[in-house]
Length: 169
Image (cartoon, rainbow, N blue to C red; front, side, top):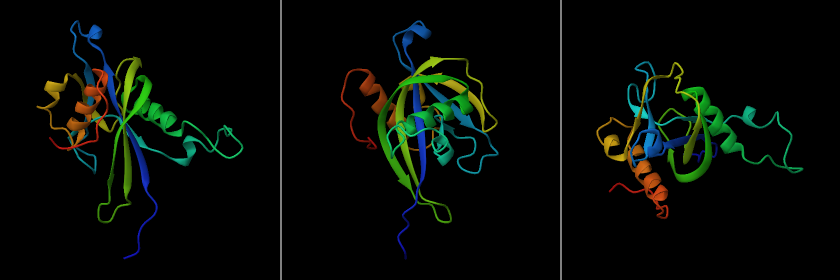
């Protein structure tokens, strides 16, 4: 079998609001429920994000003679705005994963933590509901596998701890 070298690159955001928005001290995370019509993970809960395309940078002036910088950050801002209608800031790396499903291109997914900046949540047609949930509430939601652990890592970072590698605890 020939080794595949091309990946779809996907970037996701664990968007956080601090407790002052909810009159408590808890962080709240934006989760979205996918439409039942979605091919992958129908009706499951997830975080906003999407695919990197060459259109995310090739029409822009290069930052150096050879490169575009902040491509993932720009893509993540665009995807969160498209899926959830909000602006984000302070994007930080959380973890990464890869998948190679039979009959599909392999994907590299980069998960980030981002602060809510502004806007009211307005969902696109791929999503049907949203909630701002505390970490403990996230346990009871039908999240796509692995996302709860990503939120745990994000909360650890927000509480002053150092990031750790993803693991199923």
